[in-house]
Length: 560
Image (cartoon, rainbow, N blue to C red; front, side):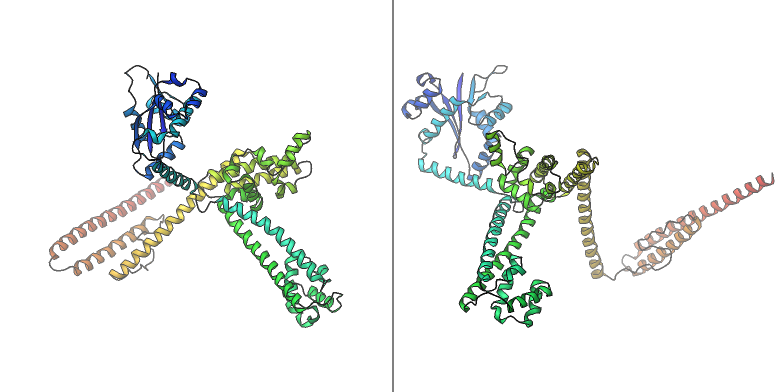
């Protein structure tokens, strides 16, 4: 059986045939040893056909298809043209060696060409890759290197392309920076407290918050200059007038030492730096909240922004977190404790980063592990919905959060929770209704815009239409629905009379050149309207006669 080799290079597709495999041997070791010697390897493998790519874009498309295990039309035509065709009703006496098993299975499904991908074929393809520039004439090694470099850059660029609104890398960097800022702000705040306490030691016991302490240290500067006139400004900073008075009284009887103006300036500058860092930390947290609502809205609504961001950063990406089973997600962040427990044969940890969720804190000590397992299950569902769903909605996360709340009630009070199938059905129905409402609002907005345009066009071309102010007539020409027939007939007659007047005005306004035709049309319309009036009058008479007959019958029955 003849063996052909399909080699995908950066410059095009190439097809090789392995002739004398007996010279180098059939085993992998013999091929591996003969690959480095071109004179020996060139006798075994020979070029059959080469199909260059038309452009860099074509090369990128072919490379993407091969990486996904798909066979393009270009590759199919290349194989069908260059491979020998088997006779009808007989099996092919050849096999095609490929590097990707997925591509081989796709080729076999479409073209019925038997393919193989094993170590022996991979070693042959490695030799082809090593001496590829020698097999093809007029192909320089520098040209091949340029093609490989360009295709590598374009392929990597295409893989890195992402949706700007759903970049989980930004969340990973933001949560890392948030943790670093928390540590730095705490360290710097302690340094401010220690530094300024040499001058005003009593302030530490009065103010506990680090940000407020730095703000007051910058405001007070020298404690000896603090007096009762500063109480309103201090009350604005602290938010409590009693504390402001307490600070002023403590400054008057302070035991701290005096500092030079240069020292006070340095303390103020450092306090300002701490304030700036804490303000930036607040802005960064707001940014993290908005990004998490865009990237993983269901996970955010279920477990919170910070815990969800920590899970994503620990897994590496949202897709990696979605691929994790719930058992892995449950102990994510507690790897050291897990391996220590496996090594010492102790108890494995029940939770990792999920422990920071408010649900675990609300559960009793007996039910913490059970709730952590249940919460990890719901988090894995929310992650997969966020990662693979095209709709950016938080409906599923809210429903999953409700399920966790019901599970807490079940552990505490014994109330039976709803089934997961029912909850997911309700979530899908809510999502469908929300989509319908969004589409309805969009349609209404477009209708309003079109109406505005039409009204503007009517005002420009001519005078606006007068609104009907008569009783019983709606502006759209529809009469209000009433059960009585006599009132309906009166209104219909009234409408017909108005239409006749409008037709008369229209016929008088038309030019004399078309006067004869307009008169004929008006006469025809009048005849039709007269017929309508006669039919209405006949209907009214028939109805009155029917009523009279009914009354007579009723009287005769009463007399009998």
